[in-house]
Length: 292
Image: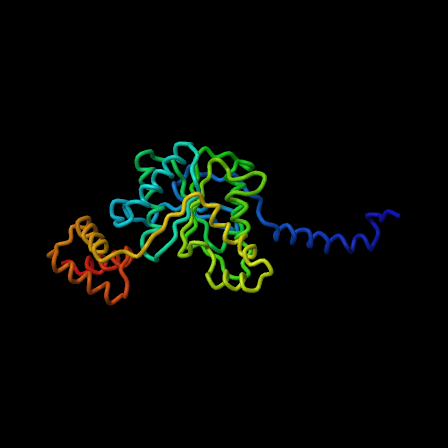
């Protein structure tokens, strides 16, 4: 029996049902629209709104100021130039010691390539906590919603996964798996303090409790294998640390006696209990602030 529009029960339900439908529409995620990649050279991915927010000024250091990482710098630069030229290129994992310029190198390489060929590459940062939405971002850049002409370098800083964190599966599928694979106009760079992107004790626990220990961690360890480039960053020596200080001092034209600067830099590193590019930069910032 079909209810009539003038039936009292039907009339009483129209209002509540309409409000429910409107509420569901408001809760539904916004439909992804084609990204406008022409407005900036750098963006951040906002997962909650499925949008790219332009970054007018990227916080970065000039590539010539990055000391003690010449080998990995040249490898990453060559790989990125290949990608920028439309040639095959690898996803890259920059791993190792804190403060040795991993994220700085990615941003510096992007700036160097766009400096010689403006507008060639778009740098898109995705935050660690949003890595599960990476397939959604890839779909947007692939051209299913719109076909961007520019090549996109997706960057995730300080990437790692803790116990019971299953979001690594999204990254794994994007890097090498799935039917669609990685879009041809997208390359993925990540930095991490961990070579295998997971804590050592987690790997050991799974080995000790699993029926097949070698297979227990294979799925998670194999995530690192999806990166064609593994670039290691190691703690620097005192000579390398002082070379960083000298490079910064020359760049900023510090009016300080070289020997005095050297002594102060060694003392600064001793108080921090570390020597790294970050510590050298912090020392120079302190010294610049004291300049007359």
